[in-house]
Length: 230
Image 1 (cartoon, helix red, strand yellow):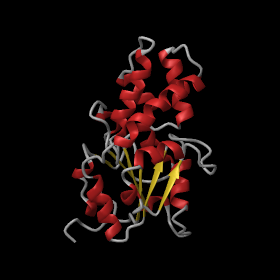
Image 2: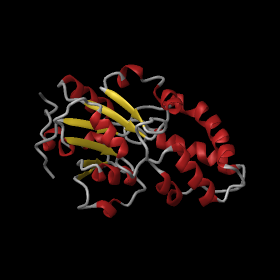
Image 3: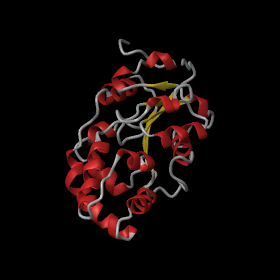
Image 4: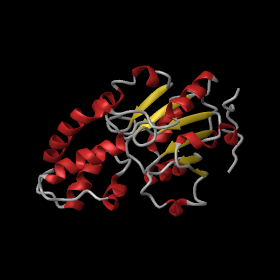
């Protein structure tokens, strides 16, 4: 679906730019192993993209873990501290972001992460993330009252471009989670969905602007952005 009016771009991080969703699965299963529970895809897809506090509460309930939410968070944070600094960029992420930055297309990050988690995941990618105009960390940003699938994060992300004439339809969102796609559309923004391999893509066929397997497949000029060979 072509959209010739895109001037700004917002990126999710986990599972979109960084290969953290794989590590989230490893970390969560490590905690679940203590209690003989299995962290399945059916459960994971229900919590992807949520603020950490919300996802933790839902996980404890869905898995019937004999833990309070705070106890679960203490355990999972130990796993994150060990795993997240090793996370690599996903295919196509480096090329696309550097291309947009080179052509002065304003880009920003909108993630459900809090500041501590984001620092861990980006520790070895500081130069890369410095290319973004700003970063909205929904997990503890006071301006983001509700996490995805609510539109708050993307609305704050667009507002911080400091362009009073910017309209939602001019902001392209890249997401991997279904609730992120829902959030972008609630904000009135077109969305490119790059779901996990396990996700049934037919669920959103015809309901979002573009569905891809990886960022490597993205063709910028489809949305009026500078082509790669320029």
